[in-house]
Image (cartoon, rainbow, N blue to C red; front, side, top):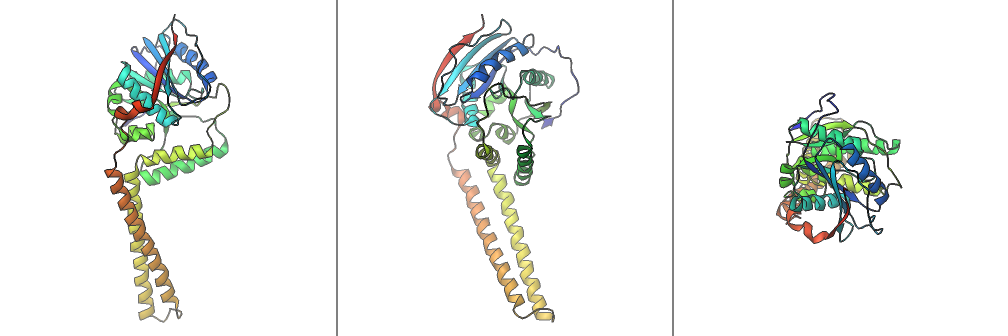
Length: 335
């Protein structure tokens, strides 16, 4: 179920409660250090307390020894060190599982640590979270993007491909707030290991959205390249692998029917009319027969792929995340 965003709400809305802000970090400590302070300031008067959990995704550079915090809301900053680089989606999965196991809270804000997910956006997400009764996972729906034309072109193509293969549109990314009740269910979803946002929809959790403009990096340059973005998109599609397999199976079946109909039509033209050029019907039938054989091979491959995916023992975040956690380190407490 998806709830659309309502129009303007009072900016003084108080959400209350305690929230964990989860940021996967890879060699981006400068941006994260600045962003933590800005987010805390943006949440002043909005929540009772905020805890920042920076998931160190195998960074070579160490985290800062300390991060300056203000007085309100009550805050703390911890770094969760992973044993190796996992990529930001899997770092999110480990971080959510760690929060579920060790951090009582009312919800978790998932955001990037580079500044493109803005402090004002966090406040808007939490207000929307309160509006829908704290019963929905609230995602930021991008109202304005800051990437170049080439990226936006490929993003449109990706959204079209995702829609065709999975039957679901792509509107959101990682930037979101998850209620505690959803976190209890989400850490038992094996697809969380591949793609956070897609796994929320895969688990059929109630979702709300709110339009939020994308911000700009605070420092440094993005380490995401075309290959990384392609892998990220394919990871989202892989969450719906059984749906993709069934859709491609239906396409293969349709190809068999069309090619079979073409062979029958060619045979009828050859047998009952004088329109066929000598050898034409044989060539057409041969080509269509090759199409049928390839479609059948595709169908068999998709069937076995679907069956194999159902029989495999998958990564279960609530059970397996601890293998990747090295230690937790406190680097700041509010004065």
